[in-house]
Each structure stands twice: as C-alpha cells, then as structure tokens.
Length: 632
Image 1 (cartoon, helix red, strand yellow):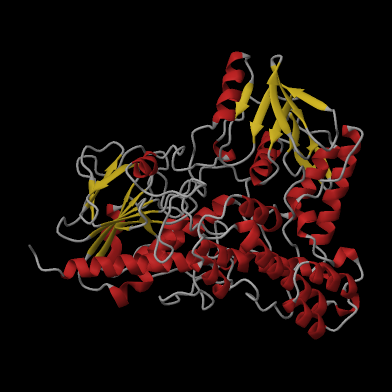
Image 2 (image 1 turned 90 degrees about the horizontal axis):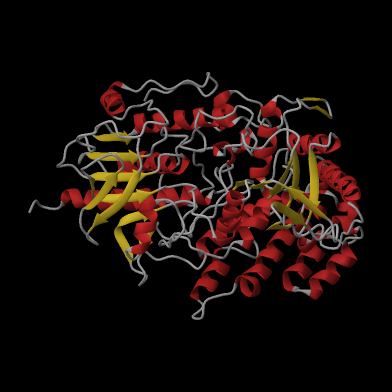
C-alpha cells in the first residue's frame, strides 16, 4: 500500500496501481458544487453482475464506515468483487461540514491531538485494529493546536484515499457527486436508489445511510417569525450551519438579536468580526467599523465551558464503575421500559461523581479530610442524601464538590439590576471559567470530562433518551477553545458583543423583534434582525432530506424525538413493528444510535468506531453470502 508519512504536508495520496482505475472512475477531486453525477446516462458504472453497496453520505461517517470495510474485507469478503457507490454532492472525506470552500477563520472544536479516524485496542469491536495518525501527527501540528476546518478536511480526504487504496483490488469505489432522492425495493430484495439529475436509479444489494447533519423545515415558531420578518422588512436567519448562512443582511453598527450561545454562535461571532476585517491586539479588539452589535442570550445565558487547557497526568478513574454494560443491560431488560430522569440519571450522576472524587482524592489529597479507600467504600454503597453528607464531611471546600445542577444552570439565581451590570458579571464569569479550565489544580474537571465520554459510550446503547442529555454534554464537554472565550471577552469590552442573560425569549411586535430574559428582570432589547444561532433539529418528519422523509413515510420507525430507529447491534433500519430491514442500514446523528461528537479522541473506546465496525461486518457477511448463492 502506498501511503505518505504521517508528518508530510497535507496533499492527496497518489493511488496504488491496483486502484488507479477506481479512483479515475470516481472523480477523485469532484467539485463541491457539481450538481449531477459523473455518468449522466448511466449512474452506476461497474459490473452489473457484481454485488453492489450504496453509501449515502461520504463525509466522516461514510469514510469511517469505508475504513472498517477495508479493515474487515480480508477476513470476511474475498474474491467475489464488489462495487461501492458513495453518493454525496460534496467531496469524499470531508463532506459538507469539512469542505475546503469555507472561511479559514473557522476552527475545529477539538485539539489536533484529540482527533483521529483510526481505531485502537480500547474499541470494543470484532474487527481488527488498523492504526493510523491523529490529525496532529498527520499534519505535523502542535497537539494542543485547534486546526482550521479546511485542514481537517484535508486530513479526512487523505483518510479516504488511504482507505480506498487499502481495499482489495476487486472492490471498486465510485463517487457520485449528487444527492440521493429516495430508496425503493422489496423488503428482502434488490434496492433502488434514485439520484438527483439521473433518470435511472442505482441498483444496490445493500444501502447504508451515513447522512450526517441535515437541514430541517422550520417549526411553527420559526415559520411565524419568518413571516413577520417578511411582512415588516426585518431580517430573520433561521437555524442553519453558520458557514452556509448569508450574513450580508446584518448591517454594520445595527443591533442583532442572537438566540443561542453554543458553537454556532462562536462561528457567527468570528465571521461578523474578524471576517469583516476586525483584529485582535492581545486582549483588545480593534473594530473595522463593519461589525453589527450582537446581543446574545440563551436558556443558560452563558457560553459553553471552555475546552480544558492542560494535559492529563497520572492515574485515570477506573470507568465505567456505576454505569456500565451491566446497568445498561438491566435497563433494557425492564418489561415496562425506563425513564431517563428516574432510572438513568441517578446512575449517570453517581458515575460522574465517582470520576470527580477519584481524581480529587488521588491527585489532590491535601484538599480532602478522609482516606480515599474509606470515601470510595461509603460512596459505593451510599445514595442521595448519604452521598451528600459524605461529600460535605470529606471535601471541605464547596468549590471542590461536584454540583451538576449548578453547572447546568449557572445563572438560575443570579439577577442584575441593569444590562451594564450583567456585562460586567458575564465577563467575570468567562474569566473564572478560563482560569479554572486552564489550571491543573482543578483536574477533577478533566476527570468529569472522561466520565462524560464513558457515560456517552453507554447511553448510545439505550437509543433515544431525549434531547436534554445531549445539550448538557455539549455544554460541559464540547465548548469552544479558550482563545474563543478570550475573544468574547474582548468583544464585550469593545461594545461589539452584549450579553442578554438566561431564559431568553423573543417576541415580534410593533414592527421589531424584542428580546427579554430572567437575569435582568423587566429589561428588553429591540432590533430589526434576529439570528437563531444553532443547528437545525431535523426530525424524520421535518428533515429537508427527501430520502429520509420518504423512508419514514413508507414505514421506517422513528423515536419520540424524531430520530430514525435502528437495530443497536448493527445499525439496520427498523420498521414500525420493530423488525430490521435486512438491506438498509443507517449511522449517525439522524439515528437513535448517534454518538457523542463528530470525531473520536484516541484511546477512549469511541462508540462510533464500534458502530462502524459492526455495520461493516454485517454488510460484508451479507454481501459474501449473497455472492455465494447459486444463480437462479
């Protein structure tokens, strides 16, 4: 196999001779905006007599599945030939989110050392481990650097090309740079995938939906706000991927209400400040004069917690401890099902507390009053009030105690008499968060982060647990890099960014949008522009993806939250009677087996790797057995 060294510049890997034809057939460097496939008359090149697999979505999840196909092919699939069709209007590897055509000002949200597309021995899977470089090893970056998204896209493209080169010579990959519109075919018969711009469908023995994040039709509130904006000549930008939003209508110097304080807001902030010519000198922001004034609020009223800015040292907490496979199995076996708050959350809370106090007692024993062995024993058998009493007696400083409710809603009991006081208070909050998240004396916070990853790996086995957990996880564990919070603070001092506080509400009346909140009672801010700074939430009924919407209309099962229901064992799509469709699989955030983030940290047993491996192996076994059936 021909690969380039991990530290060489981020250029595409030349295909091996065995795969030269396949890469030429797939248009290895297609335009991200090309509207139709490379074979307008016949969208399915290759031998029509060979088995065929269609993967809809060629971004990180589709690429990860392909990597697992390559890893398992020598064991499970040899000699029968296979055509793999990747359907995606964007280039394979990066897909839409990590494409090259976006601002270089937009960063990844993870340190380069925490991003990998390759498995290791911590992953609980049946397939083989195939080692590969992390982003920082591949790109020769400082491990603590936050690479821009275009660099990550180049890494993903390299992973894709390396994976194609690793496939057996009789497996050919074809990329169709267009959209898949719908799937047809009998329950246990050959599938048909219709492509945008093509009269003839792709024939497939199996189809895998690796769709990634999707656009959604507006809900009732967004529909009403959009209609009001049209009627009163206002600007309303609905939930969207910020890099794809048209921000030109947000005019310099004018107030803009922004609802949402997560990662979509960070992108918006960057594009409307540095993206319009402003710059930073140390802790000072120098405006270009082209910036609007951003009034931002949300339910919590604060930005997501900063990424932790120090390196872990010493012993890791032994996880899982109180929420592992046994507890998940017991929950799944309950005849009446389970309730997240009643049955799951107490286990999660105890697991996160264990991670926190294990680190505090073992790494910072001078801040505790009793021996860890005594604390651990009582913690293990205790519950509720018993644990609270144990913590109060064993951990003297309240700042060293884990209070998940207070972390989740930091402004619940905070009130200010004016917006000016709120600005000062929020800048102090940001400063405190930055200080703590970059101070290794508070490394119990890092242990909680590891606990969150462990918990997420178990929760994906439970299916749809509702939206609250995902927001809580993102707020604590998936916040912005520290430099972004420092930029927020500088923009606040410059008057470009204004905080609205918690419990933000938006109304449309008297020809304007009006925002209010709980942190400054009775105060309001008016503006002629409103931006919903969050990703859309595409349920199977409201997604703009016609393939997924029609799949649901034809009988695919969905969860109460509107996620596509899949078999947790291998990702097969379930029908409404709970029966898996043998020839249809789905992976990713549109399913109830979604993972904890876009990418996996090395040596954390990433559930996405486990899911990709299980789906790849199931697909290869099915296709192998199909190829061995006697003709006729």
